[in-house]
Amino acid sequence: MRAKPRWIDPLLPLFLAVLQVMATMGAQWNQPDRVPVDLLGNALLVAGPLALTVRRRHPALTLAVTLLTTAAFIGRGHAYGPIFFSPIIALYSAVVLGHRRAAWVASAMAYVFFLVYTTWLAPVPSPGLWHTVAIAAVMGVVLASGEFVRARRDRLAEHERVEQEEARRQASEERLTMAQELHDVLAHNISLIHVQASTALHLIDDHPEQARTALTTIKHASKDVLTEMRSVLNVLRNGAPRSPTAGLGRLDELVERSGLPVTRRITGRIRALPPGVDRAGYRIVQEALTNATRHAPGSTVTLLLEYGPRELLIQVTDSGGGPPGESLGGGNGIPGMRERATALGGALTAGHHGQGFRVEARLPIPEETE
Image: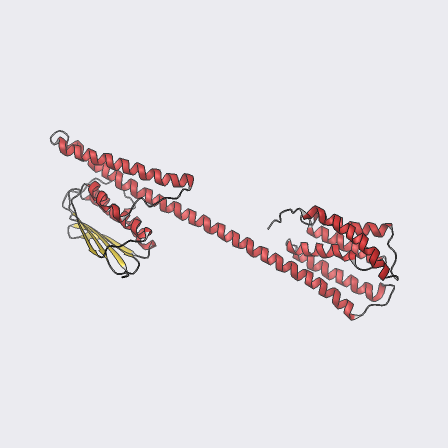
């Protein structure tokens, strides 16, 4: 996870350099046995903070420079205290920015240096065990804080990545749904236009009035397909919200446009359906009527809608009484209907029924309430 520059970044090294120089003067008063800070000592006090200016781009290098300047400063015998600010910040930054191994190795090396220095090299006797433990505790707190912040950032980054993946997946599924909607609209209306155009050509000389009816149906079907295509394409182009363009409430005009004699029967208590079930039910009926128009023109169709307590039953049965219609291609009508039903937790069967053909879908719906 790449850290963003902050306004404090250029000011922190300057502030820390002034703080270390000024505070070391005060620390010198309390440690009269330590070597007074000279020009080189002040240079070491400033070098550590200056290295922090590149801690986001080169955290490992910054950590190495701050630890070396601190070791040199302490090794020359200067006062303990403010000089430790720079390596603490560099150590924390290295862990947070993902250079964990470098941070832990550098911490171990620094601890060994301070242990050796205070035990054998310092001009004054060792402060004792508590001082050794205190150094380890401070380093442990800094490392643990960095690990906690880094882990939290990683979790947030992973959460954001998962959300983006989910958004992309949902967008992809929505596009597939719209593609299926577009397929159903085109398949139904173009099949209807094809059949009605063939009828109009056949009747135009001997029965012009019937031919006029077929041409009127073609006009309405072409208008509907253009309207629904614009609706789907507008969503793809603009991402605009779209109200459902198809539902069982539009069965009357769907049946009227089919050009087939359809007997409708509705049983059970009619009630509002979830949008997905409503749209899927409409498309299943639409596809079944399209198949009847294609493959059994002139047949009669029975349409049954049965509203059960927890299930909507849709049956579309044609008599198969006419000669086989002209096929417009293999198509994916029945698999597409079955996928719609399965996606909602329902089921769909399709097959020969007597001399005709029946499509039967069972879609789950909310339990009926009083």
